[in-house]
Image (cartoon, rainbow, N blue to C red; front, side, top):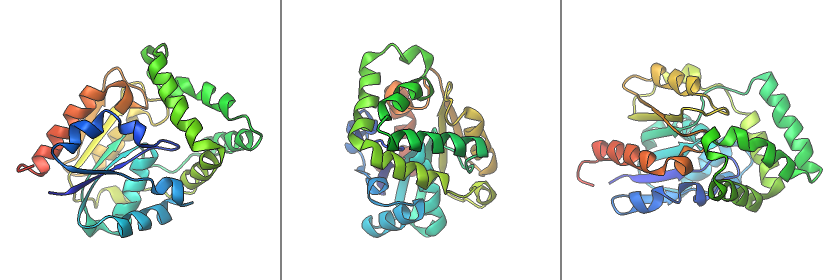
Length: 236
């Protein structure tokens, strides 16, 4: 049985996977990585994950976690058994996005974190989820726990990433690509682009979800992951 490593997004912790953990843990060895909180670059995060986790790995990454999964695969393709990229992108940041992230970092440094978080809600969730107080409070809770310093460090790590698209055609591992239909941070076109470039990739656009699809549509995401993992490891 492979180890399933869950890779949270920027400033996210295991709470992002709160509904997936009990569903997956009964059938697989599951670990939520925290390397994104301990290292300052995607390359260093990937190297640490490879050193800390043994054997061949099934990487399930959300947003920044998907970018980290691609970096792990770049460093040690023989260690990666399969990947699932949820609401992620293989692209490098555009100049406009670099500017927006830089502006956000300035606000974080000025102690205006909540101002940025509130403005980001419309990008984090499907419009129909914005009235769900439980989801909004969950999101604000784990980002506030991460704190401004982590937000600054992780944004800088993401800003420095390379364009992974030229390498996608060489991927030869089972790949699941999923995205919320209303994702405004990593729009569905980013997921379609990845799936189209990787031979045999499976693409799923999740209705009723924005960027945080594991929280917004947990049952649908659980069914996708469990079905995909069962095909990887039928005896699990």
